[in-house]
Amino acid sequence: MATVTIGNSEFDRDTAVVRRAPGRYDTHLSAGWTIVHAVNGGYLLALIGRALADALPHPDPFTITAHYLTASAPGPAVVRTDTVRTGRTLSTATASLTQLREDGTEVERMRVIATYGDLDALPDDVRTTAKPPAIPPYEHCPGPDSAPGGRPPGVGSTALMDRLDLRLDPATCGWAVGAPSGKGEMRGWFGLADGRAPDALSLLLAVDALPPTAFEMGLSGWVPTVELTAHIRHRPAPGPLRVGITTRNLAGGFLEEDAEVWDSADRLVAQARQLARVGS
Amino acid sequence: MATVTIGNSEFDRDTAVVRRAPGRYDTHLSAGWTIVHAVNGGYLLALIGRALADALPHPDPFTITAHYLTASAPGPAVVRTDTVRTGRTLSTATASLTQLREDGTEVERMRVIATYGDLDALPDDVRTTAKPPAIPPYEHCPGPDSAPGGRPPGVGSTALMDRLDLRLDPATCGWAVGAPSGKGEMRGWFGLADGRAPDALSLLLAVDALPPTAFEMGLSGWVPTVELTAHIRHRPAPGPLRVGITTRNLAGGFLEEDAEVWDSADRLVAQARQLARVGS
Image 1: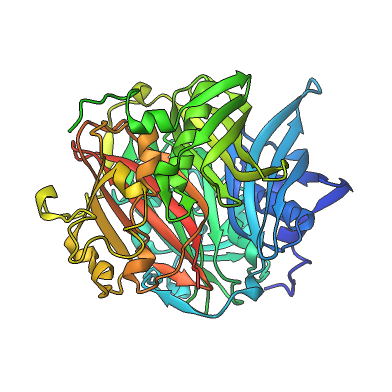
Image 2: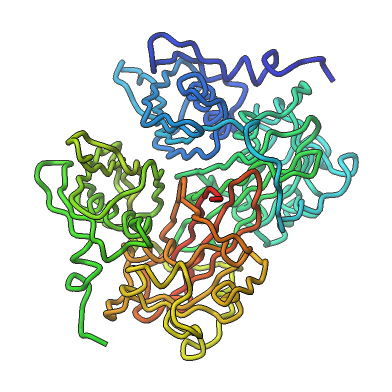
């Protein structure tokens, strides 16, 4: 494991944004965070989240919603932010991610709204009935290269998997060997491959980094996110995260996917839900 | 039960918007949908949802997110919409609700982003593992006037309760008689008092109309919504709705409240989650 730190890692370099003017940031979408042809939605959300943290007086995304309009491509992109309201403890802004088409016209990829605060300023009270997902120990969960015959289809060709240290619970890996459980559940350990510790921004990646629950439901098509909302509830402690995602309602060609992220101190650090479209 | 119809009911009249220009709607926030001093957030969302349905080529909110910036007051208000993208099956827009302060300056109440589609165009497939909330029959659930000694504090003074036919599961009513269960759960039957049938817009009210789960957790303060996201998944059948709301994680002065709404045909018609702030 490399000795990287927050601020000096693949994730930090590849989500960097450069402020060109108030509310305008230049960036480069890295080909390293793609799934087959598409740039991962959680990576894009973290990148926009970084621009918003710069634009707003508060550092942490308490609640952030993204609508995915068109598929992003690796290459140059622009984030524009617009502050809606700044308060003492919370501030709200919108953001837009755009790229240029080959003909030079602009196309919008994502529209975001978020309310930021300071996780360190929150009181320490916890009254939770939520339980961490039951995942076997890290060393008993297979990585993407553990499947017999190498990486299964839909994983093998994703650059994203080289950025992550993702270890799925074997009980939710049936899809990878052609035997999906039929249940809308996926669980696993989540880390960054270079050992970078988690923070509020990398949680925005963690909530959308597992293979889709649809795989375990026996669907093999693409499951594009229409909208994703994440609540960051606590600054994560160092160490691997546990992520559980569940789908309860697949209907009318859409499904919801709920994500929970737990840190090494057994704190529920993020809750997210996305509405996704079931491909053919 | 009055013979009202969709389009001719208290809910329709009080959420009406008048287009003054493309993307600009005048409206009046009715004092009939207040909880103590504040206008109900679900009512406001339905009103903005109606403006967006007019502005966009698609009729139904598939996913809609609202950030509640400042507390709305009964009286005149303006909704401005801005179309982000229109596609064949989905279209996306933002909206803003503003009012005038006494000094004539404008103050923003809510900022919204939504993606609309056509619920009638969806295929009929359903693969859901979600189960309707276990609620006793309608006639065994008390209305707001059934509590010994009349309406409990926090309900008695809310005009909203006169607009609704809300019947709470007795198992989640302990708070009303000073004996909260301690569990973050509330369940009940939901209808409009004048008998108006549910539709996609009234579902936006239904997801935020029950007393807060915080009451059953023994908290008595105000629980203002920071952000609410609702997914409308199916057009509701006529008849009373069942609504279940749950909170699993109360921590750091915030809680999430998840809502599920089921129609009389046992379809999961709406899923929502809000991030709320725990008052003192």
